[in-house]
Image (cartoon, rainbow, N blue to C red):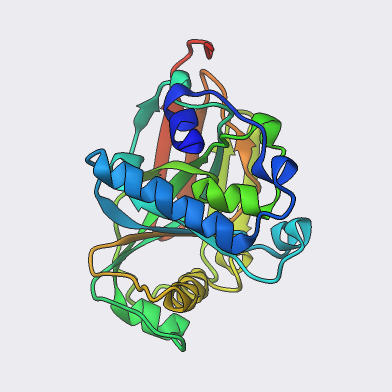
Length: 254
């Protein structure tokens, strides 16, 4: 309940890992599910998933050899060009990536990237806004997992059928304020669909899968950038169009 209230009050708390050294990954996913249940009881609708820690650098940082995941609710998805209020967040960051909208249910322990592409209706340029309920982003893996993989919301661009597109070779130019980064789809586990397939296999270990119509955020292509008042952010993809957001210029209040 503390984390659920923290997000709504925009008040950071001390990390779970510092207060409870024996808190396990299983405990963390249990907390995430409790928060999800509170969101659903509050009228939100489950609309998808996100996979995180898809890069080797992030996995090394957390001392793991696998990604983590969180959920997406309807209030977390915004349309292209959204203008965000800084007061919505505690300490936000933004990433550029692709989202997959599934056209068919998909589940199982042996799902491949090809299976994912076969089940995908469209891929969408996406900006994921991260935020942490924990002060100063001082987190371990169990903290971010409990905190819904640090996912605050996502802004989605127009969808494009994957068809014969080579998503691994696709290039992204990610502009956030004065920061400009370029990356290719290979940055996400070699191929963005491989990242989604990995998520499906992880969800299968929890007795879950991905449903037709669900949105899946497939993992960042470049480093996250601090999201500050007055910032404009854009991720442009060679064959997939672009997605953008702005942040209101008013200063954050506490």
